[in-house]
Length: 171
Image (cartoon, rainbow, N blue to C red; front, top):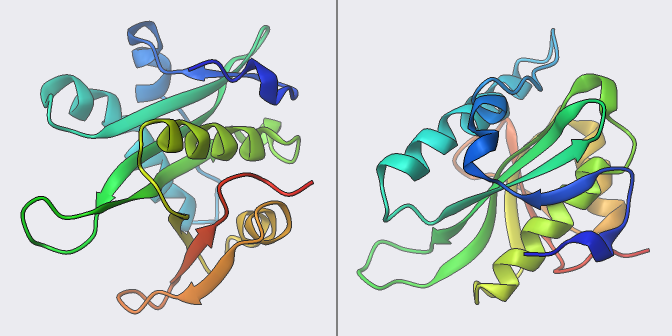
């Protein structure tokens, strides 16, 4: 997938096997914000899950800067809707993280846009869903301002919100 047309401060590209070490040790947790730990955990374990199970329908995109290496990671997948065999799927952002010192530069927007476009190219149609912790104000603001996202309480977890975003960001 070529995301060079997205522009931006970082190069966003598909995960490569050579990124495995950087992604497995990626740090996006913010001290004092426990909800950031889960995104970091998902990001770190996904390369091994993809490598060990050919049936895993999950993908990774990385944001890279020349002098800093991998500064952001998004994990996305086709999420099953329902429990029947051959059920429909929807686009789902499983985790998105940016190293603390590179936040608020538009890297989050680039990664989310790349994931949404890639899922659409793969035929995973519909609005993209993600779970965002209620205290993650920067990500909620990004979703509402750049993606005109719909935000609703998560019926399964009162600390999370279900965020449903349009396929492309709004300028």
